[in-house]
Length: 245
Image 1 (cartoon, rainbow, N blue to C red):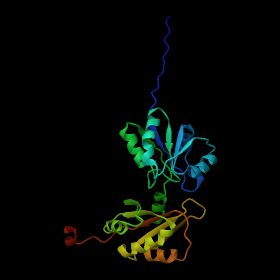
Image 2: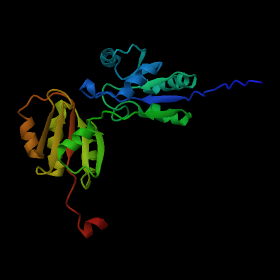
Image 3: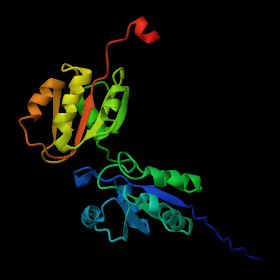
Image 4: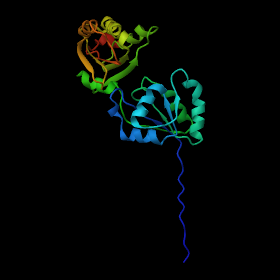
């Protein structure tokens, strides 16, 4: 009796993995994320030194390549080339989900253009716990990320004057009070807001109140850690005449 041997041929898909990393507490990385980081050929990291601590903690020894806002335009072609030639590559950032106010968007866009599959794993990102902790409406919200530092900052804020959804901003510690004071100028001192810092870490703090109360509180503090500001939307409906304008 003639025997036939079935030969399984597996077509290797070209793929980029987007892997979220903890925003503070190292326990907040998923089992799947750990597996992917162990399996890939190369890990793209925003800061290889910071990511090196995480990989060491996880017991992962893997080649890393710096991929950040200062070099991402120059290296994309090379990375697309490597993926096309069969390298499995994962992109991580210092903390949270890549491409959310971090490098990643340009590489993802270029992968899609070149027919490379992009797989984004679910995981940590700072604005979700900050929104939930705020106590403000979370059924409809907009994420604004970092406001421009200088040029265009006030112009951007003005575009949000009639925004009725809850707004979420990222801010640095040394600009927090300035940002809150600018919000008072445009949105009013009584607008409700929440400030979250050091999320998932030992000294996590979620401070809620009016914008004026938050300014008064943080003016007396030494502010450290990454900041998320959650701001209540505009609850005052414009009159018919204003709507027509």
